[in-house]
Length: 84
Image (cartoon, rainbow, N blue to C red; front, side, top):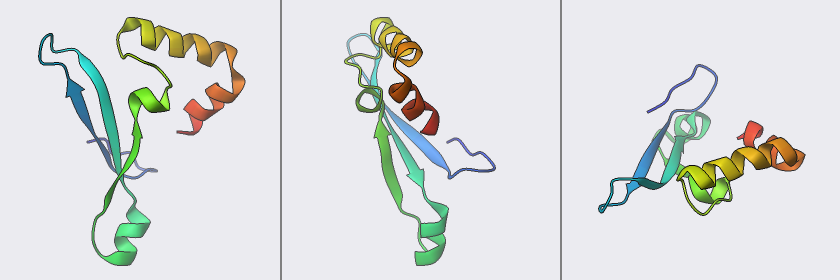
């Protein structure tokens, strides 16, 4: 679980391939504190799925390298990554 002073608590659930133990994707969940305080109960919501958000087909080196290259060449994509 990651907690930062100016953001909502979050956690990740990793999908791991059973044949080689490589992470194939992860799901990021967030607890929106204003909403939890308003309704007096926690409600964890899916914030994003890694491969969908970064628009890649694999979390292996090639997919991550593709995303890094795109951040360097596609301003709109880069802004999306920063604002997340």
